Length: 137
Image 1 (cartoon, rainbow, N blue to C red):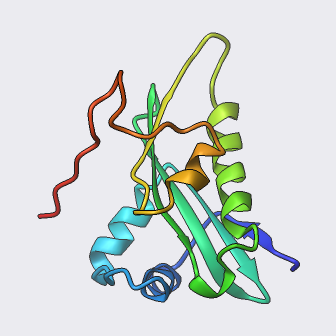
Image 2 (spheres, rainbow, N blue to C red):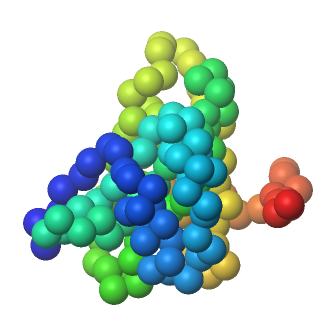
């Protein structure tokens, strides 16, 4: 597969990817705000079709949250997610200055924890950390 990475996305492309994995579509204006406030975005494109993406939301200091890691069902298990996450992790590492550290956070979809462990992420809860928590309003 000849996959290219790009670093911007239309609302239509974003919502099409969300729908491809049975996630809820985000209203246009809300999605526009979310995309425009994204710290870093990488999207995988194959033959003109966006087939995967990940976004980073950050305070620009010491916290980075990886959001919306999506790979179209048709392309899962083919290295697309790994390519996207490698790009995101490289970006986060490269913006650090000497001696700086950053806490990278993500919420894994059920059953996808093993994928993220390959990048050094640890499951929660564990002996040191409590469970991650979410609330949809």
